[in-house]
Figure 1 (cartoon, helix red, strand yellow):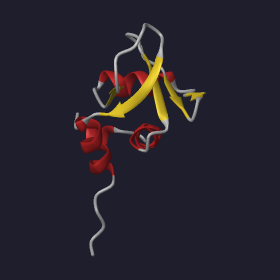
Figure 2: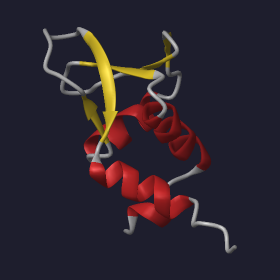
Figure 3: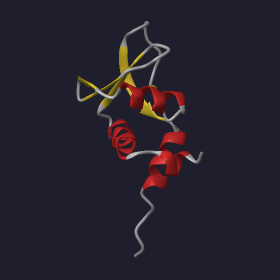
Length: 88
């Protein structure tokens, strides 16, 4: 599956929040995302984006600690592919 075309609206919106610096991620094997301090209610989306390697912790932390979430290079490519540039 090409991640750029396989993302749903909610996954793209979550990636945008991470890219804009609004998200934190918990340090665990099944990370949870927090957007603007609130828990992301769609755990499936949070886990899927992490397992696909599209988001990751910006730094290491203690088990369960919330740290800034970082959009990976693959996440940036996926997000860019979801919104191709407009023709001039």
